[in-house]
Image 1 (cartoon, rainbow, N blue to C red):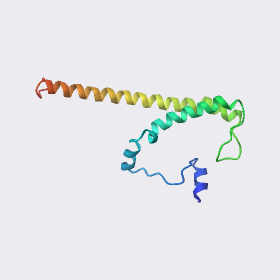
Image 2: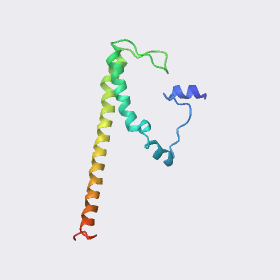
Image 3: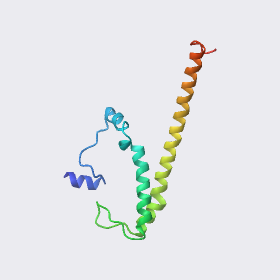
Image 4: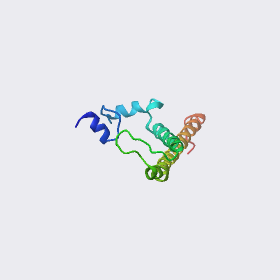
Length: 121
């Protein structure tokens, strides 16, 4: 399958394959521009902006010949945007729980350090 046809069939503009090796994943999170969670948030904002400015006009897509009409735009508003929003909300919940866990560990370490390495028990 040609690269361009593969890209269209997978709704992906990238022609190069994406490696999911662990060392590449760690590198992806080193830059805000490549953080998949920030990209998801950016995608949500872009779709919302597109829908605000669509004004019931068909939305041309790059991988199909038929543009999104009123029905498809409504489905984006009613199904896709809420799904992305729920995903982002869950990511925020996970982040907050992790931050609380890390803060607790830091407080325990400070407490042990203040008590000369004894955990008080």
